[in-house]
Image (cartoon, rainbow, N blue to C red; front, side, top):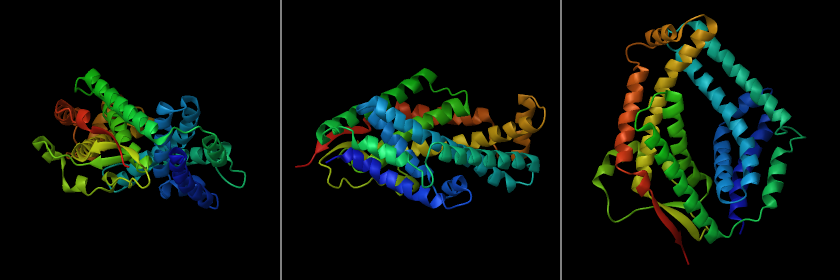
Length: 330
């Protein structure tokens, strides 16, 4: 059975349905953004990223690039739109800042519409998904047991790269976007692969439980839909992850997300200020803190908090204990 192709088809069909519906709208890009097209794109990008590492690199890198282009633009739309809506509720923030962010949102939506047409994603002539399916159909997929072992190796290498990234930074982040956001992005793929693989990765309990993990097992984390993995279904070989350590990973991703969003709110206002008037970096930051009020932590404080939680998490070697190994059913 071609499990790899079935995984791609599952999310390609989801995205195709969204594309078909969006093509009937006056503003397809806006409709896709408002109807969560980013989720299946994340899954497809994750699959292509993984299979480029375990299978046919050149083929899957090309496919990944196509999904990533759309996902990146949707991410930019979400960035500007979310802050525009958030800041519009704050009377201390000038309307010129909100207007700038709204203008950037419209610009990114227009960029998405142009890509959808140029790259043949939309309409009667929309051939992109058909072409991708044809490439997948011609793929000589790995047998299930070999693929499970390759996934194990790929996942382990991804963990190693994150550990190396952290070691390079020495638990001292200097930039919200280049450090905190980048680390969170790397960690997040570890939680996306299990969803995207549709059963090829499963969570498992172990008899021995480490006391230090209790702080990560919050109600929000345990009940999160992101931590409920797809059933193994007909899969007979899969990668096992330790459930408690997976929850710890999810907790770190969530906490870094909160810090990242807090920091980016300052950066978004700074950008808007400097694009609408002549201000130095120092002056723009000062204005941003003034508008956001006393409750807004300084970027230095945000980075310090990120340092602290990452130092605890990685010193405990939680990532290193995440993978149990491959398993097979009879």
